[in-house]
Amino acid sequence: MIDDATQIKRKSFCLNHVCITIANDFLLDSILISFSTCLLATFIKPCALKDSQSNDCLARNIENIFQHWRNGVPGLSGVGSLDPFRVNRLRIAQRVPPNVDVRVELRNMTTVGLSQAKILNSTTLYNTGHYNLGFHVHLTQINLTSKYKLKGHVLLLNLNSTGILTSELDNLEFYVALRMQPQQAEGITFMNVNAIKTDIARIDNIRINLTNLFNGNKELERSANEIFNENWRVLFEILRPVLTQTFDSVLEDRFTKVFRYLPAKYLFKDVE
Ligand SMILES: *[C@@H]1O[C@H](CO)[C@@H](O)[C@H](O)[C@H]1NC(C)=O
Ligand SMILES: *[C@@H]1O[C@H](CO)[C@@H](O)[C@H](O)[C@H]1NC(C)=O
Ligand SMILES: *[C@@H]1O[C@H](CO)[C@@H](O)[C@H](O)[C@H]1NC(C)=O
Ligand SMILES: *[C@@H]1O[C@H](CO)[C@@H](O)[C@H](O)[C@H]1NC(C)=O
Ligand SMILES: *[C@@H]1O[C@H](CO)[C@@H](O)[C@H](O)[C@H]1NC(C)=O
Image 1: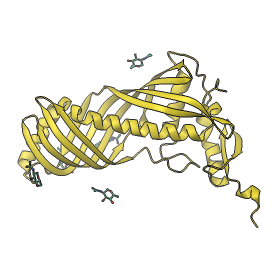
Image 2: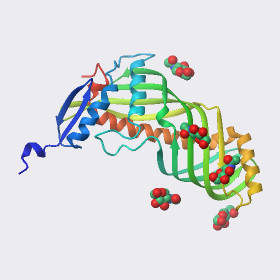
Image 3: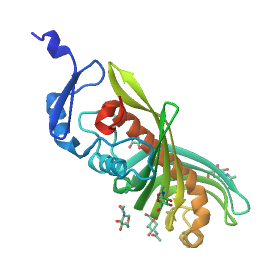
Image 4: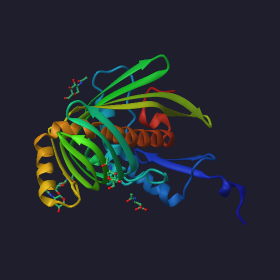
């Protein structure tokens, strides 16, 4: 016999070695998984959310969430791996006269390196019921692999090809703006992510390699790739929307799910 109490789904998590179990009727998992969450979540500390130009506590929390939960969040299904991170399909149409006018489709893109994110600083601002968080993120290196389809011109080369794209990006820095709002669910306050937007502030180098650029002509392929690498800043204008979209979707997915999972008071001190 299974009694009603067992049927009530249960969610447990733990902060500073104290385990809390909440019964509610959305998402829940076994006690075992909850227990591992208990052991892992000690890296989260409640941070003050008052207006601040340098909220180190928040910066460390975010960094820790990215590192410790890079393979997913224990007890929470539907949060994918961060390293590698996969994107099924991306389409870009980019026109930057006179160098670039292309349409690119990327399939099965994989990136490696996101879990190494370092938060350089973090700001918090409260405004009419919303919290605005801002942080500068640094990534030492991101490696990207994808199937590509490309049509158009780049640096005087007329291209129409499909193949494999691999790329390494060095020293990337971007700014993230996140807007969130407290929301009640089952009598518990959670943070609801309203919007998230990233903006790349700096990149030091891009190495790129596209296969099969000219129907398998290796000579032409090599010289085209050399031209791309010598002019990587032009390539960056093509990759910028890809990177921005990737960061936006990674961050939105993570923050939305983690904030919906952990009651606000475990992440933020001064939230009712
Ligand atoms: C992408 O990967 C999935 C799963 O591995 C596969 O089924 C699909 O055919 C791939 N798509 C392309 C365009 O390679
Ligand atoms: C990216 O690839 C290079 C060359 O294969 C490798 O040395 C480097 O460790 C990789 N970086 C990451 C973040 O995986
Ligand atoms: C955060 O760090 C970035 C990069 O070092 C810097 O440009 C920015 O001014 C800093 N912001 C604050 C509020 O300190
Ligand atoms: C591009 O290549 C595809 C497949 O090889 C071909 O069908 C198409 O006509 C080409 N387009 C142009 C503009 O050359
Ligand atoms: C580009 O990638 C192809 C296929 O992975 C590889 O054979 C080739 O050596 C690479 N070229 C460079 C310059 O790394």
